Length: 496
Ligand code: CS2
Image 1 (spheres, rainbow, N blue to C red):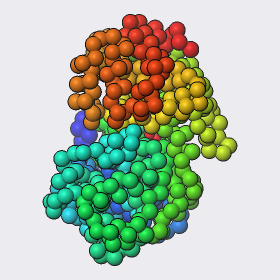
Image 2 (image 1 turned 60 degrees about the vertical axis):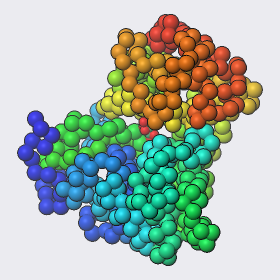
Image 3 (image 1 turned 180 degrees about the vertical axis):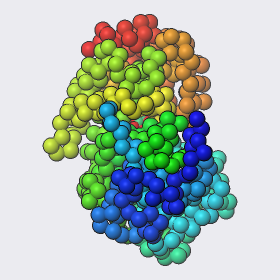
């Protein structure tokens, strides 16, 4: 059956056919836009859009979202044909529930109409910009936070052409905003980057400098633009035909922009919005002065564990995260990783026990209704490993402690980079540094120590403190040798 099977499409005109409990919390199409969101992926639709709709529903405000898709035309077309409506199906292990979200006030396609995006960023009605563009779109070196040289970025920042990169769009938009004196604005990174607010500020400052922005403009912007840090959390796998079929069954109309997500959701936001903001706290978000401890908790205690499951699971031939977790011994190993390494590496938010948080994350990963592919989480490892695992190891080693389980996670990534699962199946490498990684591996020889030597020499990934740490390198090489010789299943069975 085709996903829409000839059924009518979701939209304002068909909303009356959607079961009452599945309709939006606000009257869609009636709330003026106050937010631009860059990156209309599944995560945004199931997270910030849901919080924002609930906040508008509870407290009002002109906070409709204009969703900007950087690349995907299919999604923009699907949403445009649906009056920007889409549904979220919440999947618990034993039940599901689908609801249409009415937070989007419009959609734009950055690649084909960058001028429209620049104009929006300069519009006084827009007072918040949120971003979920994935780690690599920031063009930042994950270790140092320095802007990476890139020909497209250089063209965006140094010529008059219409921008195609995220930093290019932001800089052009902010310059237009300064010229229009359009008032204060908050730029909010909702990506899983370390200190994401500071990273985004650094990105904008470096880009404005490269673009040759005059000092007067820089000064004007400095007083008008804030960069609140945030921690965002909800497991939202890429949508599949099954997601669309479930949505259609629940709604009675076809939704080609449907997403599915776990029940759990969390948002911690630094309260620094000079142009105002939706009352997200009324939707369950935590507004704080410092999201840093929450962010470290999540990056290390959830995402780091997720990446571990993804690499070990993919090499063991498991398709999904939940299936990987059934590997005998894996849960024990991950609990040791959290208790011995993650929990000892940083100070958590007041009142939070890191091991309890880790157990909760493992229970969420085990949700069998969420078919999150190990290969999806394994993507872009070079951009993810530093904040998810390597910072944990750096902090432990600085205290003179071992980082034994962190070394296993790094070894799992290196084993994944071998390109073949334990059963010989090809494992694709989807990573912005794929060329650098492949070149490094080509010179490495085939001993574990050789692989460690070659990969640890990539300064964009491995902080100097680890690259020079013989003890840590030996632990990684030891685990890598065991994984290559015995396979994931045997290593896990004997490990914890
Ligand atoms: C995952 C995250 O794909 C990944 O790398 O670890 O997308 C994870 O599902 C979210 O951060 C959960 O909030």
